[in-house]
Length: 244
Image (cartoon, rainbow, N blue to C red):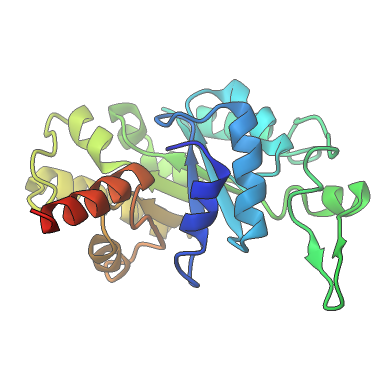
């Protein structure tokens, strides 16, 4: 959520098992230019999948030009999901214009004797679609009504659950993260089941590593473990409390 490549590198280097990093342009203070730098910093640290989350369809092309490997978007219907796929992929699978000049410098091969090998435009084109993972957010009443149809759309890879917005939209705001009402728990399980039935992955936002492990044990494939702004607040709070 917070800008800055120094922060990005610190997060990526905090663990050897980091698979993906969410670059939240929907809620965070991250502009297009900053997103460009964060994607590069994430890739340089070896995190294989920078995931960009954004609020509007028109942002897809700009994010894909930076070669963020995943995209995430709020939507409502299966037709919305098909449009996300079309806007994200180059022909014949989509209708996104091909532009590699800003993308090819993000993910490069490291040579054992020094130097790097940058992708050529042809190499980038050959994997521009296959390396992309498209995650769509399921957190509104409209998406819940269409979750099975959305999951079945070819090209959609992940159903992404934002539990706080989901809870608000179904009338049960999360007042205590440790105590979700049963209807919310069942709704989350329903989304998971829709993803499994369509052989798609399911992702959920978590506040802690313990929550992430618990969801992994319940059949979820991608889980966040901490948000940068939350982590900074917790660490500084603990340090300041210890000095009293």
